[in-house]
Image 1 (cartoon, rainbow, N blue to C red):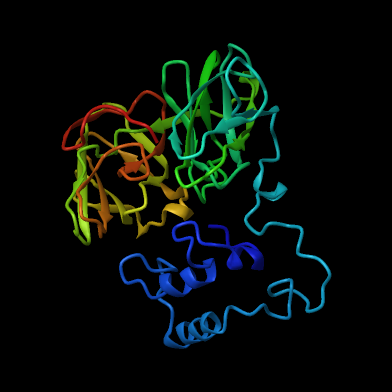
Image 2: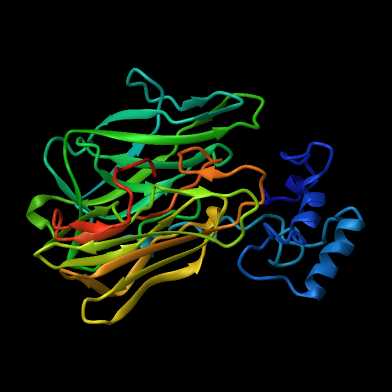
Amino acid sequence: MSLKTYADLQAPAVSDGTKKVYQMVGVRVHDTVKPMPPQEKLTADQLSSIDTWVTAGAPEGSDPTCGGTAGSESMPTTDPGATTSADWPDKCDEVYTIKSHGSGGTTSPYMVAPGQEMHPKISVPAPWGTEAVQMVAMRALTDNKKVVHHWILYGPRNEFLVGWAPGKDQSAPLPPDVGMNLPGGTLTLDMHYNNLLGTQAEADNSGLELCTLKKANFRPNTATVNQTFSQFLINIPAHAMNFNVTGQCTFTGNTPVKLVTASPHAHTLARHMKFTVAKKSGEMIVMHDGPFDFNEQQSFALDPIVSLENGDVVTTTCTYDNPGDTAVTFGENTGNEMCFNFAVYYPMGSMACGSGTFAGGLGGF
């Protein structure tokens, strides 16, 4: 449910048409299982203010700019979360755009049927042709937020190139000597749409922009995305709270690997993600340890970069709350769960996840 305008608050709630959205706000801020906001508990005074406002019918305030200058005739034109030119690299040999579309090579938006959760795989010729390029930045072009759940761009060998989920509107900054590998040939834009509660078809033309370098200007280190720090054996019991799913991998490569970013991904039951490296020397490195919110997913640049050497153990821990009456297992749909750390690393092809408890195989984002 959108909360961007006052009219959004007065609209019927998607999850319960007998209530207005503002009434659901009053419920969610007191929910002990799935509270809002999810990371930081509201104070008693804040809750009291919201309760008073909801009881009064959610009256509109006098300031239409929601924190801007009172009496202003227009809303701010800049989205605070939008990517600005300052976030984009100074040097791009070429900026390419890839968008979702219907079948048959048409450039028209993809149509998402009502009452459906869909996973179309859209074939896209690489706009840079058959030669590989390096990506140094990505930003998402999200068209219809009501139905876009996530997307992944796969390479010609079904290798994960780059992905997006809510909140992750751009790639984490790369070190100045690192570029991401983008192969040439035929790519696949794997879209995940959720229009289960919709009563009409929705058009979407989401996609991405890529800042790329041609071969003559490649950065010294070519990186790619590792998917093996991911647990597929997920079975969260009904009514389980603070339930941990953990996987481990002992790095067995002869060439040390540099981990550049960490990118947690799960679905709506996940509450916390933790990624650690136990060095063979005995040192413990925490790559990421923080709360998880499906609507605010991010990639995190590792500073300093983490080096993996033979014998180091990588652990991924995903923590879930399952208030439902049935167990939840791994799967691509919203009602299933995932436990991923999509880590960017270099040199490309040197990742070797040997013995451990990560389940084999690769799945959707």
